[in-house]
Every structure is written in C-alpha cells, then in structure tokens.
Amino acid sequence: EMCIRDSGSLVTDGAGRVVGSSLIGQGATDASGQALPAYLQPRPSAAGDGWDGTSSGGSNLGPNNPDLVDAIAERQAAIAASDSVAVDAIPADGVTASGSGLDPHVSAAYALEQVGRIASARGVAEADVRQIVESKIQQRDLGFLGEPRVNVLEVNLALDARFGTPVAQPAQP
Image (tube, rainbow, N blue to C red; front, side, top):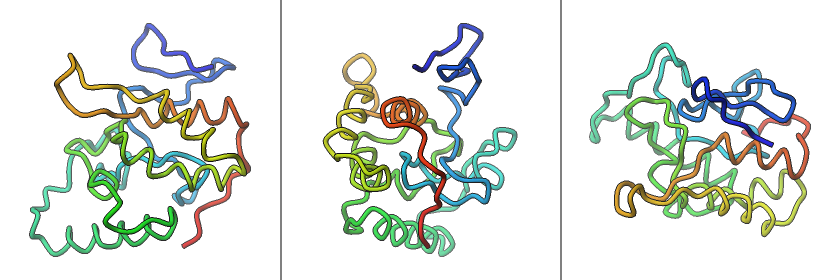
C-alpha cells in the first residue's frame, strides 16, 4: 500500500520506507541504468545525467536540432523493439523529455502502450496490468486543464503490491 506523507511529496512503501516522490520523477532502472521491463517507464530525462533532481532542466535542443532528431529516432527504435509496437504508435512523451526533465507523469496513452511489455515481463495477464494502469489515470484538472496522465511511481508500486517485486532483469538491447 502506497502512502503519501503529510511532510511533502515523499512516497513510502508498505514497510514505511521512502521510495520516491509523487512530484519528482525517477527512472525505473537497475543499478547500471538499464530499463526494467517489468515496470512502467517514465519520459526520458534531460536533467543532468538523467533523473538528477539537483540539475532540473530540459535539453534546450530545438525541434530541428540533429542531436534531438537522432535521440528521438533512437528512443523510438528502442521502444518499438521493447514494447513490440509500431513507431507511429508511440506517444510523443515516450520519446521527448519534459521541460524540467523530472516529470513524474506520463500520458495515459503512453502508459497504456506499455501494458503488453509489463505483463509479459511479469508473466501476468495484460488485462490485470491494464486494470492497474487505468485505475491510476488522473483526469484533466478542473475537467479541462492538461491531459489525462499517470503517475509512474504510483503505477509501479501498485504493480509490486499486486504481483510482487520481480527479479531485476534489464531490458534487452
């Protein structure tokens, strides 16, 4: 069971250990930085070396910058391979960093796109993973501001609570 403490945005697990923040994103990776396929993946991060809370910021690369174009193409290819989807099925937030580089949310569309990979990595039914993701979708603020979104940490904690913590195995290159 996840608990958001009154003392800020700290999120604790069922044992009371702080596991993250509801307001500051973090990667779902192993110690070497490899994405863990059994978890919902966040947006890419341009903060420092990635997910560095002391170095918040975007890449500052314009849409025609060759480095950004190449990075997006690499991210598209990696997601298409790991999630077994067509490149044009990947929502933009799956391949672009947010302005802060620390966004704790992904779009509902990107979260739902990842359901198959997560279910396969955990050896569970896609419908069960989809139910968890759908239960965590936050609708537009005041009914019209922003887009439906999912807090990545909340989904990952719910996955572990329901299915247990998987043995850490990095995604295949």
